Amino acid sequence: MAKMKEFAQGIERIKSAERYIDTDYMADMSHWCAVHATKYMPKHHEDGTMYIPTTAMATDFDIPRSTIHVTLNHVVTAHVGGNWNDMPIVVLAPYNDVTERNGNPAEVSGTDTYWSLNPDAGLILPESTYIVHPSNDGPLYQIGEHGATYKRDNYTEEEVALIESWLSPSDLDIYTNYKNGDLQLWDIQNEFYGDKRVKQMYESAKDKRAFLRGLFEESRFDILSQYLRDKVVRLSMEKMGKQWMDGILDNGVRSQIIANTAEAVGLPGNSSNKGHSNSIYAEIEQCWWHSVKTVFHGNSLDNIPGILTTTTESLYDVIVKRGPNGIIPEVISNILENKPIDFMKVYEGRFRNSIGCRIETAKINLINYEQELQKYETNVYCSLTETEKNKYIKMYQDKISKYRKFIEEMSAIQTIDDYDKNLVKTIRAHCTKMSGEYNAWRNKLEKEPGFEKLVKQLRGLVASRAMQHSGRDDL
Image (spheres, one colour):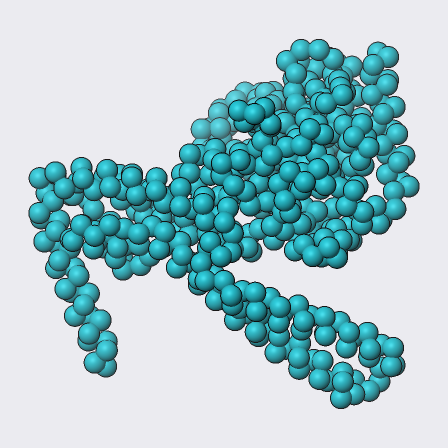
């Protein structure tokens, strides 16, 4: 009971401290705490250093994702890109210590700061790292020198009551409905994505409230464990001399302060949570998804099976359905002429296209800002005071300077290697693996009895498409 009281007092200390935290707290980078929520404990290199592997490393380069992501001073919340509420492990480290070991991130954002990392190393964790993770036994929580533990299940009634007291009004409503079975059919459809089996069990249940209480029991306890996890993370930050920060939201005030602080020292800052999704790194991942994974492994969106799962009997239909898009022409050339597929060429092409689009967009923005600046300089907005006019002139001058620099830097980049050596190293390893998988399939395909028929069909398809293309040119 004393331990429970001590824990509750710790939470109250945090709440009290938050009321007096200046909005500019995050303007000091020494206050920043990198927070990474995950299902997996960090790994160890042979020299003993802890690290978090990139997705490329964790998947043996099946996926060419070179980045590791953190939030600053809070645990990532669910959004359209994913849900981290059920991630049981939270890795905390002072931001400055992380950069000392890994260099600067590719982009700084309160909601999504990320590094592009060497696939031989991953994100190296400093000695000051603090890890919060579940414990199978022991007290409700325990704050240690280098880490904290908390329970994820088997709560006592007293412990449940304590965690319930922390729930926000909206979460308490959801939790109470789960607890009492006060849910509707649409709640089941929303929670279980329209699973017909669950719907049938619900409709056949004699005591529907009892059925729903059982059905949502795990969801109810997920809410409790998430809240306990986050409270322990808050206490852990306090132990580290950092503060948990509420209100770090997409384009929020604190997010803007973080972005401005990063840009003031020459780092790319973004107040949005969509920095990575709009980045070149994401373009590369989309290239894998749309141009490579879709073709070679299949995609449920269009129900076309992947090439690596086809035989000579089905491959022709797959190629026809895909059309002369993406990497399909290279697959045809490989089958007809045994010409090796240059997977790296696919990624380099997507990269150059991404760079070109960004340059063109920047040029359009530059023209617009130059035109606006000219209006202020020629007193088109004559109703403004001199102070107001100079404020806008300075703002547009800064934007123009920023876009000119961006265009100059982007124009100098020709290859992925020019852009990011860690990224290109990841993609090359991925392409090597893809080539091995493809070549093994190609060798197997050639030995199948229908291979000659497939070759004949593809030659006819190539000739037909050439004639169609020639006909359009004649028009």
